[in-house]
Every structure is written in structure tokens, then in C-alpha cells.
Image 1: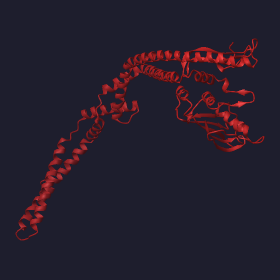
Image 2: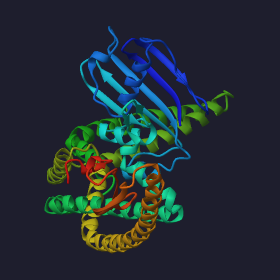
Image 3: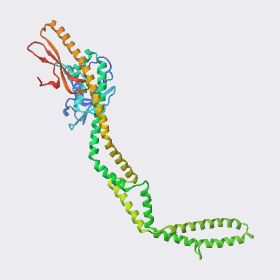
Image 4: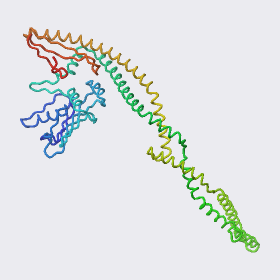
Length: 433
């Protein structure tokens, strides 16, 4: 049922927000009060074409929104068939821009006008002087048959089987599309993976190579600097260690006549030991630094390969390249497994389709029995009213594929006399005789 209606900037209405409680609600007013304007706004929610002239003067757009409680009306099949989110509360919204652009939403999901129209007809029945929209709808006529047939359990099972079959069909279609795309890209993916595998990339390699290139490029400068420092420490003439050794001897000689000399000697000796160790470390490192042009060329070549792969694949790090290689491997593995999965889903779909057809046959049988009973009862009730030649007939038509409410189309036909055929028409049968 309709719970609330919100209208903004439509015709003469600047803003209107109405809530509806359970029971019978009446909107009254004199001519020109705006009753028809409200119906016009509701018409937009039913999928009617929008006219920018309906936008309130000076406004950039108009908005119409209605909130419905559909928890007790069995509308889940519509939402499943249209791949819309189902909830016990349904919100329809229509926005019309002054530029002429129109947007429609069902539960905040963009929807087509055809979807709005179909759902709107399920939610709202408009009665006017010469029109009853509901009576013309196939869905309404089908509801009548189901009520007469009392086939809730059969219908619920059919809907469940149909939903499973459609989900499998969608998954299979998506898998076919994905498999086709990946197969089209298989040669490209394989080539890219082979190129990455040939590079034999290892984690942390790039950082180590960059450090090595930096070292080899400045090897002579580094060696000269370390050698100069080592000379400062270890030179026999004026070297720091030599001077400290002399000063240690001096303090050692002062210990007998100068008490603090003992402490100073100990501290200086510790410094001497530490500096001597540092001098030896610097000397060792200087000996290990060698300029190797061949190794520098190899490291640069390896780095250039990594840089070119990063640029080609538009990544920043070696780890991203390795992750990309893993992704390529997975895609190639998926390609080989698609056929098995497709075969599995195809078998499942065919099995589900058979179950859907079998359940559809049960559903059709119950509806056919209800239709024949309705024909007999209606004729029996109308003949005493002075319509001796009246005929009411429920016609059937087989669909190409099962739909969410069955495999058969139904149409109510009313023939008041022998010479006149006045049929309650449905959109899918208009023009067909």
C-alpha cells in the first residue's frame, strides 16, 4: 500500500509531503485545488512520458517520490527478474530536469521507464470514468486465476525453480563472455607472461642492484676517501693513533705524581682502542671497494631490463611486476578450466530447465482447471441477467521461454452476444486476430 507521497516543483506545487495510514483516504477539494495535479505527478511514477512544461516556473527540476509497503504482496519475482534489490519497502522516484533529461529510480537503483511502468501497474490501480487499467493487465488476470486455483504452493515452488534456473543462466552467460574475452587475449597474456618469466625477477632485487650500481659508479671516489681517513689514523708521522700513543705514555708517567692521571689514562686508552679498531675497519672496507666496469655494466643492464618492464606494464615497483605475472598465470589457468566449468553449468542449467518445465505444467494444469470453472460460473451468473448468448472465455498462448509467473500467457475474452465480440485486450495481443 502507498505510505507516503512527496512532490517538489511540479506544476503549481512547490513542495508537498503526504503520509497515508491504513484504511480509506480521500483527497477532496474544489475545481483547481490540485487534485488532478497530484494524479499527474503519480502518472510520472507509472512510467508516463515527462513534459518539462510541468516543472514549476523558476525551478531547475521536479521530483516525485512515493514509498510503498509491499511486504505482503508477493512482488519478489518482479525484482528478481529485473535484477533489482528487493525489500519490504519500495521507493519509486522520478526526476525531470528543465533541460528535458529525465531519470527514474526503483529503491535508489536507476531504472527504465518500462520497468517503472510495469512495477507501477502492480502497485497502483487508476480508476477513471471510462477506464480501469487493472482489468486490462495480464498480471491481474493471472492473479485472478491463481486465487481461483488456490495454487500458492505450486506457484511458490515454480518461482523458486525459475529463480535458480535464471541465476544459472546468468552465471553461464557471464562465464561464456569472460571465457571468450580471455581466449581472445590468450596469445597476448601468454607472451607477456613469458617475457616476465624470462626476466627471472626476485623479490628485493631492484633495491640491491641500485645500491650496487651506486657503489660501483663511485668506487674510486669512495676508495680514495676511505684511504685518506685511514692515513689520518695510522700515519707514522703525525697520525692520530701515533699521537694518542705518545700521550698515553705521558699520562702513564704522571700517575705517580698526579692522581687524576690514572683516570685520564684509562679513558684515553679506551679511546685509543676504539679508534684503532675503527682504523682497521676503514682499512678493510677500503680494500674491499674495487672498481669493476664489467660488473657495473651487468648491473646496469639488469636494471634497464627491470625499468623497461615497469614502464611497459605501467607499474612502479618490482613487486608489482611479480604480482602481474601471478595474475597472468591465473588467467591462463582459468582459460583451461573454463570448458569444464561451462560444461558443468550447462548440465545444471538443462536439468533446472527440465524441472521448471515440469513445474510449469503443474501450474498450467491448475490454472486451466480454474479458467474452465470461471467460464462456467460467469456464464451461469450472467444468463439470468438477460444475456442468454453471453460467453466468457480464457484464452491461452504458449511462450517461447518460461517467465517468472509461468509458461503460458492468459487472456480474458468477453462475448456479450453471438454477433459482437468485445474482448478485454492485452498489450501483447493488440492488433492480433
